[in-house]
Image 1 (cartoon, rainbow, N blue to C red):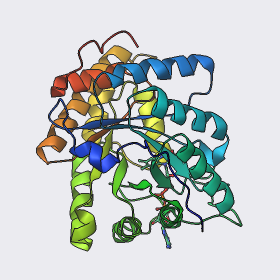
Image 2: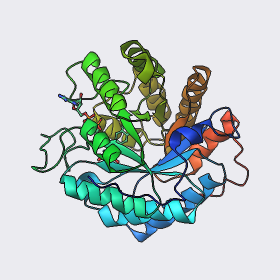
Image 3: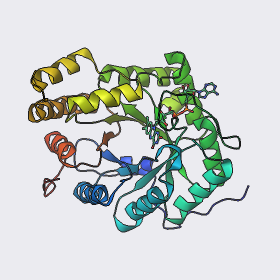
Image 4: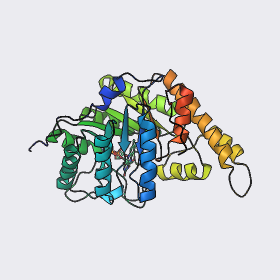
Length: 319
Ligand SMILES: Cc1cc2nc3c(=O)[nH]c(=O)nc-3n(C[C@H](O)[C@H](O)[C@H](O)COP(=O)(O)OP(=O)(O)OC[C@H]3O[C@@H](n4cnc5c(N)ncnc54)[C@H](O)[C@@H]3O)c2cc1C
């Protein structure tokens, strides 16, 4: 298979970036999603510029279910890579794509100088818990996507990991085995699904190290988020098949109050406290990087970063 040549001025790898100097106690990264309207796009670029001043190790851009927003996603990932100073990771999913189309997508990213890709299987569009149907000429599991990307050129690939186990894995041992397979296939690091119980993350790290010390030495990057709405986090957690720990849910529910509308300001304040506490514990546990799911907003994550001691000067303009 012929190699795709990435832009020679291609970006540093995620592993290089998290080893580079940073201003706070630990490197951090930020996840964005492709905007669906002009107003959302303006909000995204505002957040991007705010975070850019804080020197994140990298930023990542998710890939819409089934490739429905493919052109916009590739355009925005390209603009992140070429119009900012940010190392950009493009998420890539296998849903509804043939191998030829996946190859074309990798090539489209390479044309924009993007050499960092997050290889994912993706969920069925519409219902993440629905039946997963492979494209007849596509790939079935993320491992195959890691191998495909590896066969196409000099890319740096990451994969997903799941502190609570993936919802389709029969048990945690099978889930760990799958992560190790993806790392052995060539992935250089993994980013976890968002979680709210640090113990789940630490147990995953222990399982990977026990299963394969060489793969366990690769960066396992925790995905976290400051909660700003109890209603939205409940929905997010339900969609991803994960659980909000009882103590976290109780603190948020107490802040939300029992009025007809949740007290957003109080929930936000508790959400920022909770995220800061988790981040401090993860830093004490020696994580290589903190990955923030920003939902394209800058302010709440900036507040957490500021409390952690990251240099956020000039970053708190209204989002
Ligand atoms: C950090 C992060 C970013 C994400 N970004 C996106 C995004 O941008 N767009 C999007 O649509 N989704 C995204 N997702 C969601 C992700 O696509 C789903 O969670 C998906 O269900 C699993 O993807 P995966 O790459 O882990 O799949 P895989 O690693 O392929 O695993 C899927 C399931 O198959 C099982 N399995 C794997 N190999 C085998 C085998 N050989 N035999 C039997 N069973 C096997 C696994 O145990 C697991 O249960 C993201 C998830 C994370 C954690």
